Amino acid sequence: MNTKNLSIALLTIFFMTNCATPKMQHTIPKAHAHDQASKITATNLKNGVYALVGAGINGNVLLSTGDDGNFIIDDFSTELTDGLLETINTIASGDIEYVLNTHWHLDHTGGNHTMGDANATIIAHSNVRKRLSTSQKVFGFDIPAQNKAALPVIAFDETLHVYLNNKDIEAVHVPHAHSDSDTIYFFNNINLVHMGDIFINQTYPFFDLENGGSVQGVIAALSLTLERIDNKTIVIPGHGPITNKKELTQYHAFLDGMLSKVSKQKAQGKTLEQIQAMKLTRDYDAIWDGGMISADIFIAELFHTLQY
Image (cartoon, rainbow, N blue to C red; front, side, top):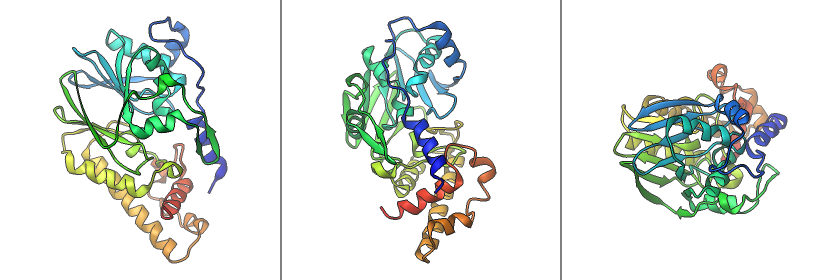
C-alpha cells in the first residue's frame, strides 16, 4: 500500500480544524465567507431541493426549502461551513432548522457544531452520535471527540420517517457499509435519493474498514437502493456529480466485479503487492485515479475487506 498517499488522504479527510466557528445568527466575515461560497456550486434539482457541491473532498449537501423551514443533509467540513451558510442565504431566507447526517466522517459533519449552536435539530443513525461523541482512530490517526453541539439529538437504529416541506423522507440504515453509521435518504414522493458515501462517483472510493465498514456492505447497500429506484430517480452521491440509476448500476457492477477479482487472486495465495502489480483497475484509472484514493489504495481496501 502507498502509505504516503494514504496518510495525505486521511489527514485531509479527518483532521479538519474543529475550532469554534460563528453561530448562524452572528456576522460571518464577509470576505472569508464569500471566498468559501465561490467554491460551492448550487443546482436546483426539483420541488425546492438543491444540491450543493463543494470544492475538494467535501461531501455533497442537499438543501430543502419550504413551509417547514430549511433543512440540509450533511454540512461539509468545518472549514467550508461559513461558505455553506452564505450559499444557502442566496437561495432561501431563515436559519437551518434540521440537519440530517449520512454518516460520521468530518467531511460530512464538520458543520454540525455551528448548526447545533444555532439550535438546528441534528438527526442521524445512533452510531453517528457514538462516533462523534468519543475519540476515534482511523489508520493510527486520532480523531478527537466533537463538542456537544455537533451531536445528533435524534438518533435511530434502523429506519426513520421524516416529513418536512411536503417531502416523505425515509432514512434507512445500511449496516457495515462505508462505515458502521451510514444512512441512505429516500425521498419517496419526489423520486430522489441521497446516498452519502455508499456511492462515490467517478473516483475510487474509501471504506472505513477500521470503524465497521466493509466493501461487501457497500455492495449490499447498492443492491438495496437499485431495487427501490427507477430510471427517473435523481441520485445524489456522497462525492462527485449528481447522476442516475444507470450509472449507479454500473458502479455496483464495477465494485462487485473488482471484489471478485481480488478475492480470486487472494485465494490463489497472491500477496497484496502482487495483486496491485496486476493493474486490475487499468480500464478505470484514466478517469478514477485522480481522486484522494489511488488505484493501489483501492485494491488494498478490497484485499483487506476480505479479512473482515
